[in-house]
Each structure stands twice: as structure tokens, then as C-alpha cells.
Length: 195
Image (cartoon, rainbow, N blue to C red):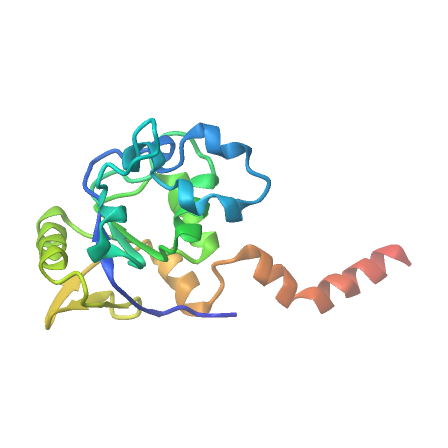
């Protein structure tokens, strides 16, 4: 199992409080056969007009191409509990989300996908977002152990739910991985119950 205690990548700031799961992935895209199809539809109605022409959303700006860290504001991922929202984020190429706060179910769905949801207060998050806009080509270095983000020789503290942080540090954030790691014990119980 991958402990995923350190992350590095360029960031993009997507402003807004109460960004709900329908904005993250509009309902009409939930009919996909596999989650792999969701990436291009991330924030679709925010990014494109009715004719599919870009509105200049931060995710579509050339300076943020390939960014893997999304910074936003308060109550990110609220609304319906659709698992498609964190799946779309992951399939787009985002592997860390930083916000002031997160909706509970969205946070849990991100965790099982290996996407840390880092909580950061408004003032330092605004400072970090402004620095990212000035130097979008520079990577952020995230350390889940020390709970610090390094960017342009500055350090920013963040918080995580203790149980979630512990799961990332131990590599136990994915329940399916946990089950597969115990397959011998599962087989032994199955054999005992089948006898």
C-alpha cells in the first residue's frame, strides 16, 4: 500500500464557497459507464457555454495546465453525496484539494480514492492562492506528516481530521486495499465456515 505522505505539484485556485457536487460534475454526466469518462466533464457548466466554448475557467487557463492541486474556499463538495464528484476530480488529474472546509461525504469519498482534503483557514489560503497566481509554474510541496505546505520558500500550515491523516500516513485509506491485504485471513475464515 502507498502511504502517500508527501505530494508535489502545481496548483490552481478555483474560487467560491459552497461549490456543490452538481457544479463539480453536472448530473447529466452521471450516466457514464466507467468513472474514467468523467475527467473532461469536471466543472463542465462552469468551464463551457452551451456550444462547448471555453469560458476561461481557471482549469482551462494555459498557466494552470497539468495542475494537480486544487485550492478552493469554504464548504467544498456540499450537495448530493455523489461519488462521481471526487472521481471526476481524480480523473481530471487533481490529487489534492485544499479548502477551508469540506462536506463530510465528499471528504470521505476523496479519502478512499487517496485524495487528501487539506483544511486551511481563509487568510493563509488566500495568500497561498495569490502566490500561485503569481508563480503558477512553481510546485507546492505538501507534507502530510508535518502538516505543512512549502511554496516559494514560505510555509503554510493546514489541518486534517486526525483519523484521515493517520490513514494516509499508514497507507490504510483505501478499504479495498485493506481487504486485499488480508486475503489469506479472509480465505482462512471462508474455509473454516465452508467446512
